[in-house]
Image (cartoon, rainbow, N blue to C red; front, top):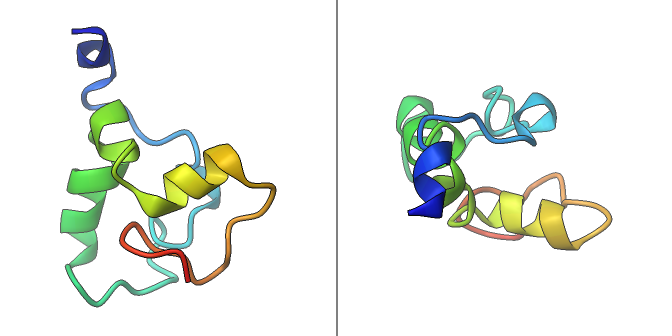
Length: 71
């Protein structure tokens, strides 16, 4: 139930995310879908995003990392 408070919140890393801003294209899905599934879904979506996971655990996120893969 604790995650409910985050539903609908934007990812804290979105301001510097090339996927969120559409400068890094993800071929698996349209940008609107990516944002709805990962970026604007709150902690539930963020925790499923590889870029978010890397941002929380590493010093630098690879520039080519997407919500689906590290490289």
